[in-house]
Amino acid sequence: MVEFEAAISELDESLFSRIRSETTLADKRSLLAIQSAVRELKSSYRYLEIGSYLGGSIQPHLLDPKCDIIYSIDKRPKRQPDERGFDWTYLNNSTKRMLDNLREIDGAAVAKVITIDGGTDEIKPEQIDGPIHLCLIDGEHTDEAMKRDFEFCRKVLDPKGGVIVFHDAQITYNGIYECIEALKTEGADFRAYSLPSVVFVIELGECAIYNGPEIMERLVNNHESYLFCLRENDRYRRFANKYPFRIMRNVYAKLRNGNRSN
Image (tube, rainbow, N blue to C red; front, side, top):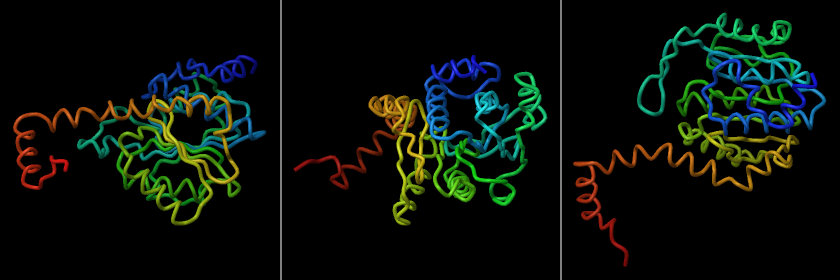
């Protein structure tokens, strides 16, 4: 107990060390900062994530005595589509494998993990018992799936307020944009921002975690997430600048006078 409290207060990324997680060091620290900020506001909290694979992102919540329950929603596909233009393959993707990984960390705490094999297009919000305070969306990396996951999270979130987090925001940024535009149209009470490396946060209602020192530090230095995302996608600019695409673009720009300033 004391070890966990010390680790979370220091945003110690070793809380992710037992199960491989497809996150950068900065991602891990941002996720821990969010968890720390939520637990500062709540005497206890309920966590839900969409897309668990091996259970890497569940680790710090499994060990957290303030986390009462963990919902893991995952279709467990062998492969799934991706906005980067290829299907992403998941080897040995099973709920049993994930739970076995988690039992090696804390066998007793696994009792608070509830798994649902399916997607948010298949399951109903009523399957989630009680309000959720923190959601992580890291499932199918397409804009449509991400928007569907976001709407599901909103339906199960605490009506007073909660936090929805997106991982790999540099991939599903169009979907995130549309979610934010919908919130604006609705007149919802929300705050949205990015954190290093590719973590995007939407706070809803009373759950204003941005005031926490760990979050504020990352907001002050938000160039880190901005530049990381741009550099991650720079491969597409490099590809577009290769022959013959560069010549084609120059011809098109000249025909449209798009490369001229008056």
